[in-house]
Image (cartoon, rainbow, N blue to C red):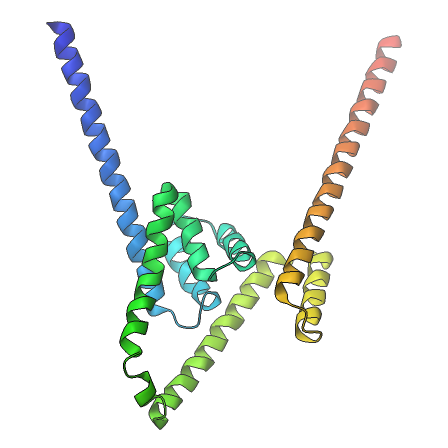
Length: 226
C-alpha cells in the first residue's frame, strides 16, 4: 500500500515537472517569436542596420547571448546563404530551444516584413513619385547610413585586436572596393587564412609546451642525480 502511494506520488511529481518544463519552453518560444517580430517591425535598413537593436534586445535585455556571440553570428550569417538577420535569428533560436526555437525565431523575424510588403505592394507605385515620399525615403537612407556606420565602428572595436587584423581588414576593403573582387571570394580567403594561422599557432603552442616539459624533466633528473 505504501509502495503504491509512493509510486502515485512520484508519478504526480513527474507530471507536474513535465508541465512546468513544457510551460517554460512555450514561454521561451513565445518570447523568441515576439522579440524577433519586434526587431523585424521597427528596424529599417537590412540585417546590419538591425545589429544595434539586436544587441539591446538579445544581449542587454534578454541576455540570451553575449555581444561576442552576436558578432560571431553576424560573421557566420554573412558567410552563409540567405539574409543576415534571418540567419542570426535562426542561430539564436536554435541556441535557446533547439530546432523548434530556430524555426520560431525565424518566423518571428520574417513575419513583419512579409505583412508590410504585402500591404505596400498594393499602392507603392502610386505614391512613390510624391515629393513627400521621396523626402521621407531620403531621410530614411541617411538614418540607415548612420546605423551602418555605428555597426562598422562596433565591429572594428570588437574584432581588430592587433596589427594583423587591421592589415587583413585593409586588404579586404581594397580588394572589394577598388578591384571589385566578389565578396564571397574574399570571405573564403579569410576563412582559409584564419584556419592556417590557427593551425600554426596551435602547433607552435604545442611545441613550446613540449619543450617546457622536457626542460622540466631534465631539471628533475639532474636534481635526483645530485
